[in-house]
Length: 183
Image (tube, rainbow, N blue to C red; front, side):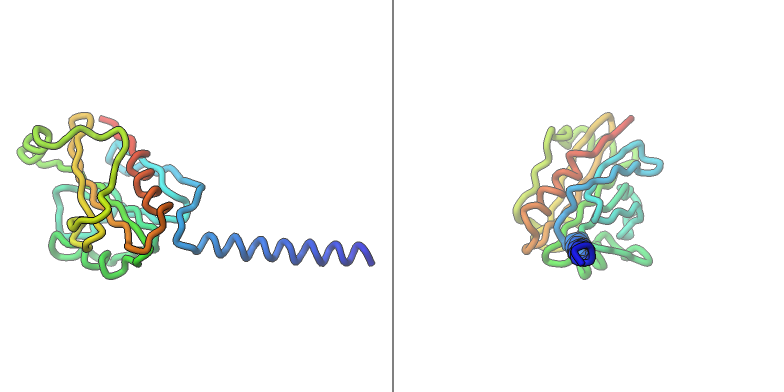
């Protein structure tokens, strides 16, 4: 009888653990576990929370600067890019507790030379403004940063929803700080 009771408790305990793990995996909070991603054809890599999502597809009609990647804290798919420079589909699907970060690289020769002479070097640690408007036209809790590194110039577009947790904001910064750029 004792063995059956112990077995039943073990099964109940394991079931509760599985439910708890599933709930935490589906929550909007960033996972402590991270995954490393090498951006195809871009000589760069980054790490991001395991329960977040990454894409290298363009979200807008802009061809240069080239979208290198977009990381979102929420599932996001888009069948084709929006027609202009605004990411309207992203803005519509972005939840109030979610976040995104996109990195684009300037490749046009004249624009690249001009940008390299005007933008600051990459910061040791990135800082996000608490408010602003500019990240891909996605509203007042989004922004844009620029930086240069290794003769390359980049735009960072980001958004952290009004109801996003401090951990989510930190995860966006951690994604940017993890960025490794090679020549």
